[in-house]
Amino acid sequence: MIDWEIDGRLAGACNCGTPCPCWFAEAPTHGSCDAIGVGVVDRGHYGDVDLSGCKLGVAYRTVKHVWDGGLQVAVYIDEQTPGPQSEALEQILTGKAGGLLATLFTLVADFKGIRRVPIELDETGEKPSFTLGRDAVVGLRPLLGQDGKTPIEVNNALMSFGGSRLLAKTESRFVDEDLGWNWQLEHADFGPMKLASA
Image (tube, rainbow, N blue to C red; front, side, top):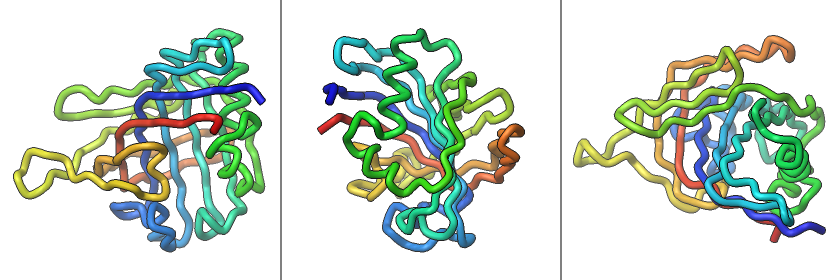
């Protein structure tokens, strides 16, 4: 198996209340969890392929609880990604390259395929946001702690993907017309992303 590693940043949102109960193996707020996430690779490789600067995404819909399986999943790769990097990300994001994503992909019952769309992540300023596709710009409103300045942080959650998560809210929608998905989003989060083949 090819050695790979990703170190970067990740932002996500779903239709659950904040924080998303899936992080703690609890039932989704509304009975199922409709969720999206985007990541930017600051440093990474798949064998000899440099993945630095690559942008990726995922959208999934649960039947009930995410950990019960039966997921519908679509994988997204930024449309500007060159061929070798795109092929490497396909292997990683579909679980074929091992690591945590291989474990998570055992929960998938309906794989919707790999889609190439615009992907952006902007964590600067007071209004961070991310984009997954042409019709889904997700604005994030960080939830601040007692000092009124520092975002609330959750550590060691089940869906942390390698780092602490900063809590946020959103009033955005995710739309993928080809898949018939049009979801109202409420919970949001962002933070580091660390994934590897082992």
